Length: 310
Image (cartoon, rainbow, N blue to C red; front, side, top):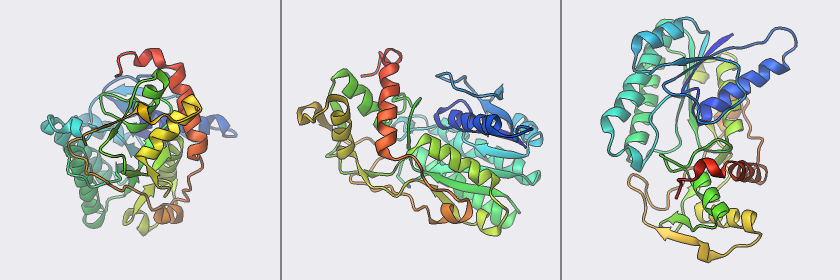
Protein backbone atom coordinates (compact mmCIF):
# COMPACT_ATOMS: atom_id res chain seq x y z
CA UNK A 1 0.00 0.00 0.00
CA UNK A 2 1.41 3.40 -0.99
CA UNK A 3 0.58 6.05 1.62
CA UNK A 4 0.76 9.81 1.07
CA UNK A 5 1.18 11.86 4.25
CA UNK A 6 0.78 15.63 3.92
CA UNK A 7 2.54 17.70 6.55
CA UNK A 8 4.90 14.76 6.88
CA UNK A 9 7.76 16.66 8.52
CA UNK A 10 5.67 18.33 11.21
CA UNK A 11 5.32 17.16 14.80
CA UNK A 12 2.47 14.68 14.30
CA UNK A 13 3.30 13.93 10.67
CA UNK A 14 6.83 12.81 11.53
CA UNK A 15 5.47 10.41 14.13
CA UNK A 16 3.09 8.96 11.53
CA UNK A 17 6.04 8.39 9.19
CA UNK A 18 7.98 6.86 12.06
CA UNK A 19 5.09 4.54 13.00
CA UNK A 20 4.62 3.35 9.40
CA UNK A 21 8.38 2.76 9.13
CA UNK A 22 8.27 0.68 12.33
CA UNK A 23 5.39 -1.35 10.88
CA UNK A 24 7.56 -2.05 7.83
CA UNK A 25 10.48 -3.14 10.00
CA UNK A 26 8.27 -5.49 12.01
CA UNK A 27 6.55 -7.02 8.98
CA UNK A 28 7.39 -10.54 7.95
CA UNK A 29 8.26 -10.66 4.28
CA UNK A 30 7.35 -7.67 2.15
CA UNK A 31 6.94 -4.28 3.85
CA UNK A 32 3.25 -3.31 3.88
CA UNK A 33 3.74 0.42 3.27
CA UNK A 34 5.49 2.54 0.67
CA UNK A 35 5.57 6.01 2.20
CA UNK A 36 5.56 9.40 0.49
CA UNK A 37 5.66 12.59 2.54
CA UNK A 38 4.61 16.02 1.28
CA UNK A 39 5.73 19.11 3.17
CA UNK A 40 6.82 22.65 2.35
CA UNK A 41 9.76 22.47 4.75
CA UNK A 42 12.21 19.92 6.15
CA UNK A 43 11.86 18.33 9.59
CA UNK A 44 13.11 20.32 12.58
CA UNK A 45 14.50 17.21 14.27
CA UNK A 46 15.82 13.94 12.85
CA UNK A 47 13.53 10.94 13.12
CA UNK A 48 13.50 7.34 11.97
CA UNK A 49 11.62 7.46 8.70
CA UNK A 50 12.13 5.64 5.41
CA UNK A 51 10.06 7.64 2.94
CA UNK A 52 10.23 9.79 -0.16
CA UNK A 53 10.33 13.38 1.00
CA UNK A 54 8.56 15.66 -1.49
CA UNK A 55 8.86 19.41 -1.00
CA UNK A 56 5.67 21.24 -1.92
CA UNK A 57 2.50 23.02 -0.81
CA UNK A 58 -1.04 21.60 -0.62
CA UNK A 59 -2.24 24.80 -2.31
CA UNK A 60 -0.56 23.49 -5.48
CA UNK A 61 -3.56 21.61 -6.87
CA UNK A 62 -1.64 19.97 -9.72
CA UNK A 63 1.04 18.63 -7.39
CA UNK A 64 -1.55 17.33 -4.92
CA UNK A 65 -3.54 15.61 -7.66
CA UNK A 66 -0.41 13.99 -9.07
CA UNK A 67 0.70 12.64 -5.68
CA UNK A 68 -2.81 11.40 -4.83
CA UNK A 69 -3.04 9.60 -8.18
CA UNK A 70 0.10 7.65 -7.26
CA UNK A 71 -1.12 6.75 -3.74
CA UNK A 72 -3.54 4.20 -2.36
CA UNK A 73 -4.38 6.07 0.87
CA UNK A 74 -3.84 9.63 2.12
CA UNK A 75 -3.36 10.99 5.64
CA UNK A 76 -3.88 14.74 5.44
CA UNK A 77 -2.02 16.61 8.20
CA UNK A 78 -0.73 19.78 6.50
CA UNK A 79 -2.02 23.12 7.72
CA UNK A 80 -1.32 26.45 9.38
CA UNK A 81 -1.39 26.11 13.19
CA UNK A 82 -2.04 28.48 16.07
CA UNK A 83 -4.76 30.26 18.04
CA UNK A 84 -3.63 33.82 18.75
CA UNK A 85 -0.78 33.23 16.28
CA UNK A 86 -3.20 33.01 13.32
CA UNK A 87 -5.06 36.25 14.08
CA UNK A 88 -2.71 38.28 11.89
CA UNK A 89 -2.46 35.83 8.98
CA UNK A 90 -6.08 35.24 8.00
CA UNK A 91 -5.41 34.88 4.27
CA UNK A 92 -2.64 32.30 4.67
CA UNK A 93 -4.57 30.33 7.30
CA UNK A 94 -7.75 30.23 5.23
CA UNK A 95 -6.04 29.53 1.91
CA UNK A 96 -4.01 26.65 3.36
CA UNK A 97 -6.46 25.08 5.80
CA UNK A 98 -9.55 25.42 3.58
CA UNK A 99 -8.51 25.73 -0.06
CA UNK A 100 -5.44 23.52 0.35
CA UNK A 101 -7.54 20.89 2.08
CA UNK A 102 -10.13 21.11 -0.71
CA UNK A 103 -7.35 20.28 -3.18
CA UNK A 104 -6.74 17.08 -1.23
CA UNK A 105 -10.44 16.28 -0.75
CA UNK A 106 -11.34 16.77 -4.39
CA UNK A 107 -8.39 14.72 -5.58
CA UNK A 108 -9.29 11.75 -3.34
CA UNK A 109 -12.98 12.12 -4.22
CA UNK A 110 -12.33 12.05 -7.95
CA UNK A 111 -10.01 9.06 -7.60
CA UNK A 112 -12.21 7.20 -5.07
CA UNK A 113 -9.46 6.88 -2.49
CA UNK A 114 -9.68 6.94 1.28
CA UNK A 115 -8.31 9.99 3.06
CA UNK A 116 -7.91 10.54 6.79
CA UNK A 117 -8.32 14.19 7.79
CA UNK A 118 -7.40 15.55 11.22
CA UNK A 119 -9.43 18.40 12.65
CA UNK A 120 -9.25 20.12 16.04
CA UNK A 121 -10.81 19.11 19.33
CA UNK A 122 -12.52 22.46 19.92
CA UNK A 123 -14.69 25.07 18.19
CA UNK A 124 -13.05 28.20 19.57
CA UNK A 125 -13.36 31.51 17.75
CA UNK A 126 -9.92 31.81 16.18
CA UNK A 127 -8.78 31.40 12.56
CA UNK A 128 -7.18 28.00 13.14
CA UNK A 129 -10.21 26.37 14.76
CA UNK A 130 -12.65 28.02 12.35
CA UNK A 131 -10.75 26.95 9.23
CA UNK A 132 -10.07 23.40 10.46
CA UNK A 133 -13.71 22.88 11.43
CA UNK A 134 -14.87 24.41 8.15
CA UNK A 135 -12.76 21.89 6.25
CA UNK A 136 -14.15 19.06 8.37
CA UNK A 137 -17.68 20.17 7.48
CA UNK A 138 -16.75 20.39 3.81
CA UNK A 139 -15.41 16.84 3.95
CA UNK A 140 -18.76 15.76 5.39
CA UNK A 141 -20.50 17.43 2.45
CA UNK A 142 -18.24 15.52 0.06
CA UNK A 143 -18.87 12.25 1.90
CA UNK A 144 -22.64 12.65 1.98
CA UNK A 145 -23.34 14.10 -1.45
CA UNK A 146 -20.33 13.28 -3.64
CA UNK A 147 -19.43 9.73 -2.62
CA UNK A 148 -16.31 10.81 -0.73
CA UNK A 149 -14.32 8.46 1.49
CA UNK A 150 -12.85 10.90 4.00
CA UNK A 151 -12.44 9.68 7.58
CA UNK A 152 -12.62 12.66 9.94
CA UNK A 153 -10.52 12.42 13.08
CA UNK A 154 -10.48 14.91 15.93
CA UNK A 155 -7.02 15.16 17.41
CA UNK A 156 -7.04 16.22 21.05
CA UNK A 157 -4.07 17.87 22.79
CA UNK A 158 -1.07 16.01 21.41
CA UNK A 159 2.23 16.08 23.26
CA UNK A 160 5.52 14.20 23.20
CA UNK A 161 9.08 14.30 21.84
CA UNK A 162 9.81 16.76 19.02
CA UNK A 163 6.96 19.16 19.83
CA UNK A 164 8.16 22.76 19.67
CA UNK A 165 6.95 25.51 22.02
CA UNK A 166 7.10 28.17 19.29
CA UNK A 167 6.21 29.86 16.98
CA UNK A 168 2.89 28.31 18.04
CA UNK A 169 2.74 28.11 21.83
CA UNK A 170 2.11 24.56 23.09
CA UNK A 171 1.44 23.99 26.75
CA UNK A 172 3.61 21.00 27.60
CA UNK A 173 6.85 22.07 25.89
CA UNK A 174 6.41 25.61 27.25
CA UNK A 175 6.02 24.31 30.81
CA UNK A 176 8.77 21.71 30.39
CA UNK A 177 11.41 24.12 29.11
CA UNK A 178 10.57 26.75 31.72
CA UNK A 179 10.80 24.20 34.55
CA UNK A 180 14.07 22.76 33.27
CA UNK A 181 15.58 26.25 33.12
CA UNK A 182 14.23 27.36 36.49
CA UNK A 183 12.10 30.05 34.84
CA UNK A 184 8.49 30.89 35.78
CA UNK A 185 5.82 28.68 34.21
CA UNK A 186 3.36 31.06 32.58
CA UNK A 187 -0.23 29.90 33.14
CA UNK A 188 -3.05 31.68 31.32
CA UNK A 189 -5.79 33.20 33.49
CA UNK A 190 -6.11 30.95 36.58
CA UNK A 191 -5.24 27.69 34.84
CA UNK A 192 -8.71 26.18 35.14
CA UNK A 193 -8.84 25.05 31.50
CA UNK A 194 -9.35 21.30 31.05
CA UNK A 195 -7.41 19.53 28.29
CA UNK A 196 -7.22 15.96 27.01
CA UNK A 197 -3.51 15.19 26.61
CA UNK A 198 -2.86 12.38 24.16
CA UNK A 199 0.65 11.10 23.46
CA UNK A 200 1.69 11.74 19.88
CA UNK A 201 2.50 8.06 19.28
CA UNK A 202 -1.05 7.11 20.29
CA UNK A 203 -2.37 9.78 17.95
CA UNK A 204 -0.18 8.59 15.07
CA UNK A 205 -1.25 4.99 15.63
CA UNK A 206 -4.91 6.06 15.69
CA UNK A 207 -4.55 7.89 12.38
CA UNK A 208 -3.06 4.80 10.77
CA UNK A 209 -5.87 2.67 12.24
CA UNK A 210 -8.36 5.04 10.60
CA UNK A 211 -6.50 4.61 7.32
CA UNK A 212 -6.69 0.80 7.36
CA UNK A 213 -10.01 0.20 9.14
CA UNK A 214 -12.47 -2.14 7.38
CA UNK A 215 -14.94 -0.46 5.07
CA UNK A 216 -18.31 0.54 6.54
CA UNK A 217 -20.66 3.47 5.96
CA UNK A 218 -20.30 4.69 9.53
CA UNK A 219 -16.57 5.25 9.01
CA UNK A 220 -17.41 8.23 6.80
CA UNK A 221 -20.43 9.43 8.78
CA UNK A 222 -18.98 9.60 12.31
CA UNK A 223 -16.15 11.70 13.71
CA UNK A 224 -13.43 9.69 15.45
CA UNK A 225 -11.92 11.27 18.55
CA UNK A 226 -8.32 10.41 19.30
CA UNK A 227 -7.86 11.33 22.92
CA UNK A 228 -7.84 9.69 26.35
CA UNK A 229 -11.04 11.04 28.02
CA UNK A 230 -8.79 12.00 30.96
CA UNK A 231 -9.45 15.46 32.40
CA UNK A 232 -6.19 17.37 32.95
CA UNK A 233 -6.35 20.85 34.45
CA UNK A 234 -3.68 23.19 33.11
CA UNK A 235 -2.69 24.42 36.58
CA UNK A 236 -2.35 20.80 37.75
CA UNK A 237 -0.12 20.12 34.74
CA UNK A 238 2.15 23.06 35.61
CA UNK A 239 2.50 21.90 39.20
CA UNK A 240 3.01 18.27 38.14
CA UNK A 241 5.85 19.22 35.79
CA UNK A 242 7.51 21.29 38.53
CA UNK A 243 7.32 18.27 40.82
CA UNK A 244 8.77 15.99 38.14
CA UNK A 245 11.68 18.35 37.46
CA UNK A 246 12.46 19.62 40.96
CA UNK A 247 11.08 16.92 43.24
CA UNK A 248 8.75 19.46 44.85
CA UNK A 249 6.29 22.21 43.90
CA UNK A 250 7.09 25.87 44.51
CA UNK A 251 4.05 27.92 43.53
CA UNK A 252 6.31 30.98 43.31
CA UNK A 253 7.52 29.48 40.03
CA UNK A 254 4.04 29.84 38.52
CA UNK A 255 3.18 33.16 36.88
CA UNK A 256 -0.44 33.87 35.94
CA UNK A 257 -0.87 35.85 32.72
CA UNK A 258 -3.79 37.05 30.61
CA UNK A 259 -5.66 34.70 28.30
CA UNK A 260 -4.57 34.48 24.70
CA UNK A 261 -6.76 35.87 21.93
CA UNK A 262 -9.00 33.21 20.44
CA UNK A 263 -9.07 30.95 23.51
CA UNK A 264 -11.95 31.12 26.03
CA UNK A 265 -11.51 31.08 29.79
CA UNK A 266 -12.23 27.88 31.71
CA UNK A 267 -12.57 25.87 28.49
CA UNK A 268 -13.09 22.11 28.54
CA UNK A 269 -11.71 20.10 25.62
CA UNK A 270 -12.22 16.36 26.02
CA UNK A 271 -12.36 13.49 23.60
CA UNK A 272 -15.03 10.80 23.44
CA UNK A 273 -13.47 7.61 22.10
CA UNK A 274 -16.70 5.61 21.66
CA UNK A 275 -16.73 5.97 17.86
CA UNK A 276 -12.98 5.53 17.43
CA UNK A 277 -13.04 2.45 19.63
CA UNK A 278 -15.97 0.98 17.71
CA UNK A 279 -15.00 1.72 14.11
CA UNK A 280 -11.19 1.83 14.10
CA UNK A 281 -10.38 -0.16 17.27
CA UNK A 282 -8.49 2.72 18.85
CA UNK A 283 -7.64 2.80 22.55
CA UNK A 284 -4.97 5.05 24.10
CA UNK A 285 -1.97 3.14 25.42
CA UNK A 286 0.50 5.70 26.81
CA UNK A 287 -0.50 7.27 30.12
CA UNK A 288 0.57 10.70 31.35
CA UNK A 289 2.62 8.90 34.00
CA UNK A 290 4.66 7.37 31.16
CA UNK A 291 4.51 10.16 28.60
CA UNK A 292 5.42 13.19 30.68
CA UNK A 293 8.73 11.82 32.04
CA UNK A 294 9.69 10.67 28.54
CA UNK A 295 8.91 14.12 27.15
CA UNK A 296 10.82 15.90 29.92
CA UNK A 297 13.85 13.71 29.24
CA UNK A 298 13.70 14.63 25.54
CA UNK A 299 13.53 18.38 26.29
CA UNK A 300 16.42 18.03 28.73
CA UNK A 301 18.54 16.50 25.95
CA UNK A 302 17.57 19.29 23.52
CA UNK A 303 17.82 22.35 25.77
CA UNK A 304 20.48 23.92 23.56
CA UNK A 305 18.16 23.81 20.54
CA UNK A 306 15.61 25.91 22.42
CA UNK A 307 18.10 28.48 23.67
CA UNK A 308 15.97 31.36 22.32
CA UNK A 309 12.80 30.20 24.06
CA UNK A 310 11.60 32.49 26.83
